[in-house]
Length: 297
Image (tube, rainbow, N blue to C red; front, side):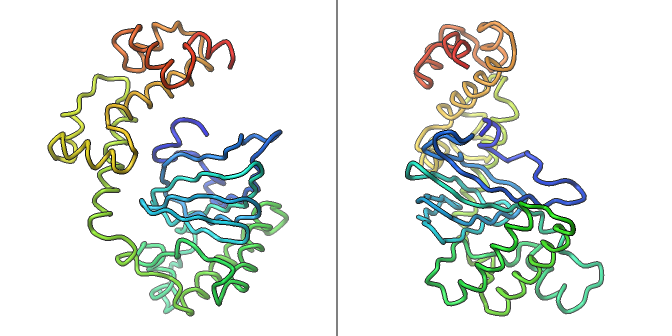
């Protein structure tokens, strides 16, 4: 995936008139996705449903880890912070993304007020994982398989069919008490950690080309620099400054592939004041120099 997808994803899935996108994804030799399959930590406004067809996947969702295997279904609610890692040589999954706002009704009847409205307002959410052992699995799985097929094949009338299936799915899960209160999914501490992580990474993504100090990042939250390093490293395994360097290098990779700018120009454009330091950090993270990377791209 492109480097900017490790933060708030800005890719448009579907169209403004039909904001539903279904995809069949195969990772392995000869596919667009290399092994091991990996999607870096990010979030987006759309709701995402992932159906595992083959392989084992590790999902990190709002700082909690889940292992998913064949037949498992994963729900990623709007704004969930998530990361996906694949295990194995062949990974196959289907995914559908949709903007939950398309399910709203202008007429506020009982269904809108008590089922769809709370879901769209994020007061109620999908459970993160449903396995084949769940009592309602077969019914839910059949609806999702039909959703995937309709959204991927896109035959005449597919969009309306998908909307109806989504309404049916949410209604069924509400009636069977499978939708969860959003307030009970995350603790106040985790909500704060995730919110602060998003603030810090979003700031870095917008300002990576400018000089950024640890204290500047701490002032965003605000907190002291020691706390910032501790909580950020708890989530990512690295410090905020190490993360900043990684993001600068990833942007440099994009520029090396997509532009003819010199290494010096790219280092300056990506926030490195010293080209020698840029080359050292680039080689440390990528295992080659910027020139070697450009030659092999």
